[in-house]
Length: 339
Ligand code: SF4
Image 1 (spheres, rainbow, N blue to C red):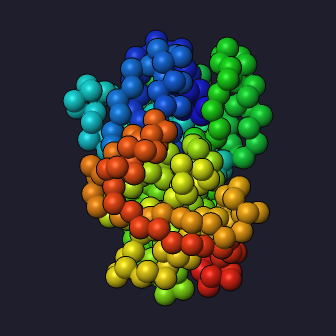
Image 2 (cartoon, rainbow, N blue to C red):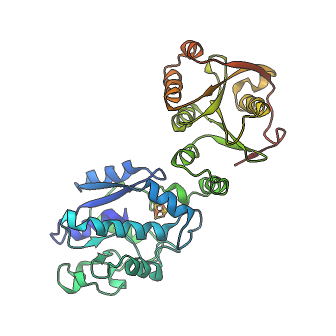
Image 3 (cartoon, protein in one colour):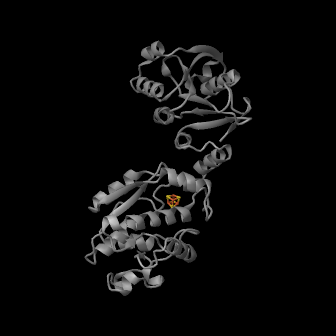
């Protein structure tokens, strides 16, 4: 919302604005695209995945309340935008940052740090809080009329909501843009993976879906979908080798085991017990389950397709599987850790 307001304020001065958004798995790029479309803002999309993963692993300026390296993140975005200025024939950069809106990354010192480290003192303007900040060269040169800029500060959203009304903007997105790094439960999962050094894009993608359990020695992980959407997400996220536990004719969750070291047969059986625990079959006691090993991305895609088409018979024909009997059990009884 803040970015939209900043764009609208600057456009009111007859200045042409183009948008840049940074695509990552931690938030939904579609929100930015939708918002840009609503105000006819040309939007350039920059892939941010590899960079943000590195920033999370080693943030120079630390984290916010969760595993969100917001200062490093903003700094990188401003630097990248500066690099693109020549190509876009831009005179200056604006951001939707609001002084004091976030406890760490939008403090006066943090905003100054971002300006100084990105060497954008003369070209970086924050229209929403400009009157609370030193005048920039952009204002001093008359390129932008400082008198039409604002003095919004702090965490209250009231001034922005009021401004949005004045500017006729409705239906705006959440302040943090829905970034998963600011969500405590997701950050906790991410911290475990950071410690395990299982931090590839693919590893992280799986964290968005289902229930996750680790073996006590951290050598394997079990993921169980909560519902059909989750099941699809779990399957879609998996590309490398994993084991897949299922019940006859797909009833119940999708359960996936990733072995980080060697394959432990006992753990497949534990995954089966958990699978039953989270399935409607839990009241029926002992059940026969099946498992198969998925070796690569192409097999993974095939399973996904069969699952979507509800084509259990063809799935059974295409993949070899073994069966075993399991009882529903709680993860604590199975000596697993929930993350
Ligand atoms: S909320 Fe997420 S995307 Fe935004 S600056 Fe912080 S870490 Fe980066």
